[in-house]
Image (cartoon, rainbow, N blue to C red; front, top):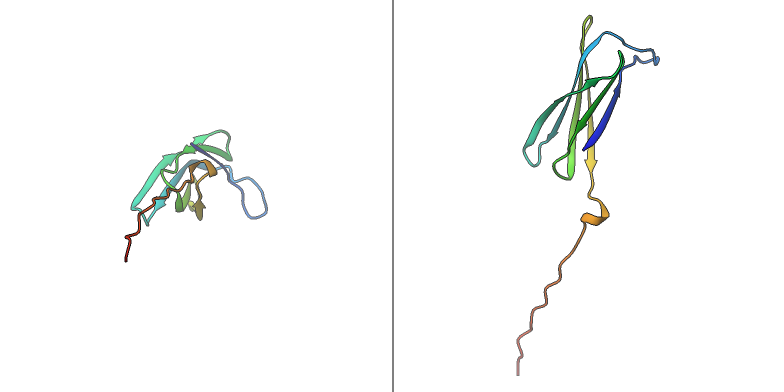
Length: 102
């Protein structure tokens, strides 16, 4: 599982405290996965936590939607690359006999 911590602030760093709900949407267009939608858990007026799993390596689009009580909703999109861990890498070698020619 991957843990997302979403802190909602304005450009000056001040808290935006009228957030009702935060959704995290994961999409991987290349593999046709998603959107996988998860509702975050509200920890405080400005902090939300979410546990979501990336199902495969590759380029993912992460969309964070903050639904406000007043004012416009806030949407931010991040493009990220999930790489395999070293323990997931491997290779296989096959040896083929070459025909003998006279």
